[in-house]
Amino acid sequence: MIVTLALLTQYYSLDELRKSNLLPKSTFYHYKTKLEKVGINSEGSLTDMPPPSLDYTEYFYYFSKHHIK
Image 1 (cartoon, rainbow, N blue to C red):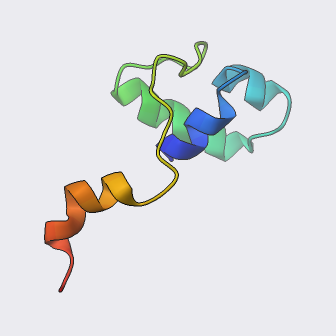
Image 2: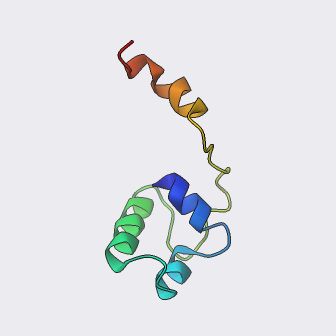
C-alpha cells in the first residue's frame, strides 16, 4: 500500500487523486484511515517519505528470518 501511495502522491495529494477519480471512493477512505493512524493527513503529499524500493532487497533484509528455508 505504501509503495502505491508513494508512487501516486509524487505529484498530487491523496485528496486530489480522489477528486480526479483516480482512486475509487472505498480505496480513498481505506488509505486515508491507514495514513491518519500513522499521522499523515490526506491534504499533503508523501514527498517527505523516501522513494520506495521496487525490488525485494529491503523486504528480504527485514523478513528473511520469517521464510521457510
